[in-house]
Length: 305
Length: 305
Image 1 (cartoon, each protein chain N blue to C red):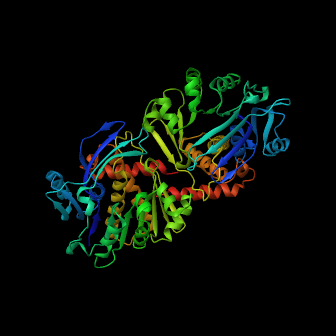
Image 2: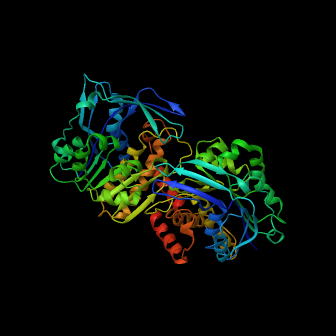
Image 3: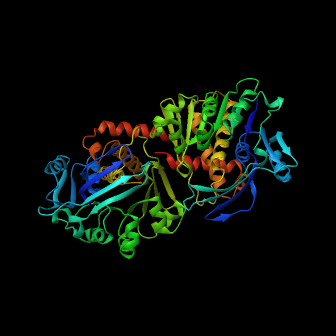
């Protein structure tokens, strides 16, 4: 019984209309695991960093129950680095720098003891790499959640389609859902994507929330309304971490229903709200369970009629 | 006891990625009144058209209970005409033609028998004109709802501030709320706008839904998920018409609470969903009460956790 997360652990340099950072800790798997750690005691991480990655962050990961046996530390190389600048509305951004470094030839090896994982979260990586992770597992996990982006639709279409066949839940933004499906209507897009493999499609809309589709059912989860949004970096991954973390917690108790999926979407949204209120992953370092419950209740109030 | 709507009745020519029209019937008050007519038996309209405006549309208005005593028909002039083209994502559009025609010197005269109105909906017009309507009323209505746009912030700032002092509910989109308040956070923006007059602030986000704020309470109403969106023209006005129409209906029975406002937002969203599925106001011409109720229940299901 374990939750396995595969994705980048890296450095980001971020500029928003409200703040600017030097190199700080980032990466999809950083946000996913920190977020999920609020629901799960132990998370297995498969990723790669360079020798430049701060040891105290790795210690923090371990304190949060994030197991690092699957973290490849290449002492003589440098961690992946991304720098970006957000536009005024925070909904779009320009990439200023991408240094692949250790991520350039990342070929994740899933340690033997991780190979029986029951829940798998694949952060945004090349579809080839995502598929190779699934293929290393001893049996098919109960739930495979995968994130992707438009870039892979442009440069690795066939591989993406192959990988999609193997996953249960796809998280994707609205524009990407349209590109992947060729449908403008998000409803039709979600139906079409379900024919490609994923039984559940989560369409992320940033500050406008997220939708989950399953067959012809769907649920609209607005974004939690943060009083101040400082930095949206990692919000989508934090959302995914809350989503899979909550479901993993529930799966220990009982069979997961679509109602649980809905609640998981809301927990994801709540976790993302903690993320965007601080720079980088800072808002995720010390969240009290009580605050999560409070925001969940606030959320319920915000949407209940 | 009456509901008074003041706004444009006009022609539009619309191009979306899915359809294109010649001159068809449009105008804020057209959408507002047609939408509200599903909740209210009689609606008083103050507007102006030219002799070119189709008589059969006016007959349709009357059949829907829209009283035309306040409609000034300038036989020898032309109706307001707007032509626009939507971008691929339907969230933004370019104006191609604006011919003010009869709207250029529109100075609405509220007929004597309309002057005791209890509910007033002011469609998007110059703030001077909106204020002049309020000033012609015998007593202050129970509820004044006003729509505006960024253009008036640019060219009629002081007049807009004067008018805002006189209204209860302001409907405005997210970008405009930020411009009006100088706050990026929609929560803070709504708090600030409340100090300018309106006790309730509705922030419209198009396909992403709408929020209503009152003091430090708020409610997030996602947009109803239409299977196919053909033309978003008039969706905001249709939304406003459903909102005020439903509240007016409720006010006949009891005192209006914030819970009613929330439901009104959902009814507004439901009405807008009928609008966007057809070109122009076509989707509003024949809506069955049963369909409204069905979508309201579908909506409840879509957001309930």
